[in-house]
Length: 213
Ligand SMILES: [Zn+2]
Picture 1: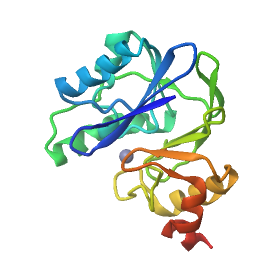
Picture 2 (picture 1 turned 45 degrees about the horizontal axis):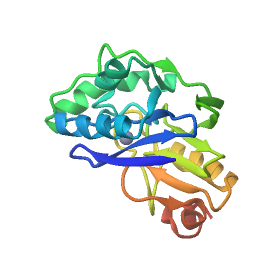
Picture 3 (picture 1 turned 180 degrees about the vertical axis):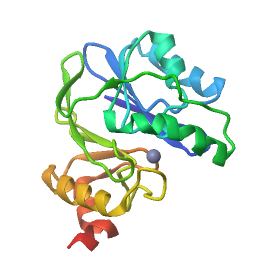
């Protein structure tokens, strides 16, 4: 089961994923204000969930504004692809450019391995490195729930921006073109911004996928 929150001025999607064990993972904790952090914490406690891990689709600041807070609050580790550790340093410059008072220096993450990864309880995610939006962007596929957490790699009708440090459109198009057709068409895509979609819908209508033909 999943729950989505839209946090911070970028309307970043933070997800909670849980299963019948009532353990959960928090994906991309972008909660910035006290009110946003309270909404996330209230949901988790009222649903009776126990967070066991934080998983990051990538290291951009809008996806980790609540990372340190969440790690401390629940005493849990955060996992991110090692190629995005550089983003934690770049973030300071990006935040200055966007006028946001935030630093992710000093945040320590564990390496998120590619392949099958136990998220919590009896739930496994298939982690695939899909660079292009950032060097260490990943997609996380949950076969048991038939959902894909696509981060900022794939959006409804679009793909992530490639003009920030570490971004590369050729690399992103290659990642998406290789990865998306490998998934069942009915898979629900839960992106890092905007609305949910499906693999089939994107293969048929996303201009960046049509472009690949
Ligand atoms: Zn991003």
